[in-house]
Length: 404
Image (cartoon, rainbow, N blue to C red; front, top):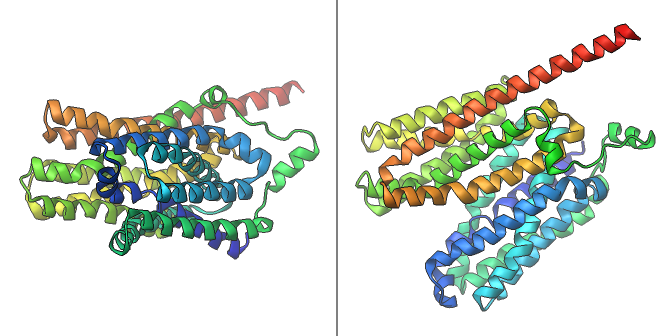
């Protein structure tokens, strides 16, 4: 693969992260300007999430037809257009309308790039690329803060929109570098046996697919719930000052970003399954330390360990998909995985909000443990099913060979 193309993919992953944290950073100014309740940010978030789910589920069909390079370039352009749309919006309704292409673009590029990297690059690059997403997500609030200082939240969105538009131009210029198909796919096409896109039902019928989708759902539910509620838990249940709680909560995100950088080196010694198990073990240790209420210093360690544990799980599950389920089915699988990820992000953190409101926020560590435990069981069950399917397939081939 061309080093220049790999550099383009790294830039694309940074661009994926840049818009993700903008709404939260800008909303305190936006909702007052639009004269809507502060809770309405959830409506915009849900529209974006719905768009990402739809486009993720359609990614297999679109990428087989147009290729990863074109889908990536067009998706980034849609995101850039939506960001400019946000910057000129003068009503909440306009914001909701621009959220549609925002979500559709984000879902397609996410599924396309993850599958392309899973097939063509090592697990090391998958970890580092997701680390670059964290860099982009971290830069977004700083850019928005500059925009707010220089003018308004519109300026922040406009700056990110310009950056996305520049990347779109570079991506279109780099289209000749992309391999639209692997050599195997080209050969299959010449023989008239090119793999067809799979429907959602066909994907879920693949042995182990339901389990890996549910495990991915649980992981994303765990990560998103932790990121959203850590600060509130520390302030309301542990009695920390709001400023202190917010500062401590950042350790979780530091752990994820640093952990993915470190994971890139560990992948030379450990395979994807071992990386996932290592991450699950470290995350468990972090949750237990938080649960034990040993003081502020141990909480710092627990939050950092929780982030470090989460770090390798997402990229390792994605990277293992072609090896476990086949390259011909990986795009469809990863598209559905992305959809399950967004569903987990949308449903589970608000559910904990209801639990915290009606029962108590002190259940936060136990809530995380439930999803971590479910993820471990589902992932191990998936590995068993894949092994059983491979054994039965090999046995069937031997029997046919003996009969022949």
